[in-house]
Length: 113
Image (cartoon, rainbow, N blue to C red):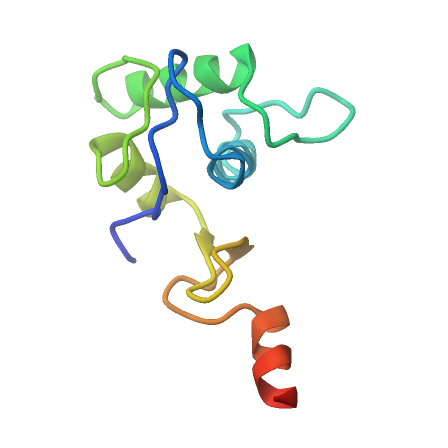
């Protein structure tokens, strides 16, 4: 299992987060029971539920419960170990099970060119 989730920037309540990172982290946390879908779908915007989920995840796995995920940090590494969601190496989009691989969309584009 790879040890990096490949965040582009920190996800922090006091900083602007990358929308792709937010969507990928929410999806991953939802997949392992930490982030509840609010009913209208999982958005790419940070919300209180995301930071609550990060903190609960950190607490459950013995990490500092600071509600922050940093690229290469302990929360990112722990989530990578527990989640099947990774980014395509070409487009950077979050997809299940493609860590270090090309997603189907990019693969189809390359095959046609």
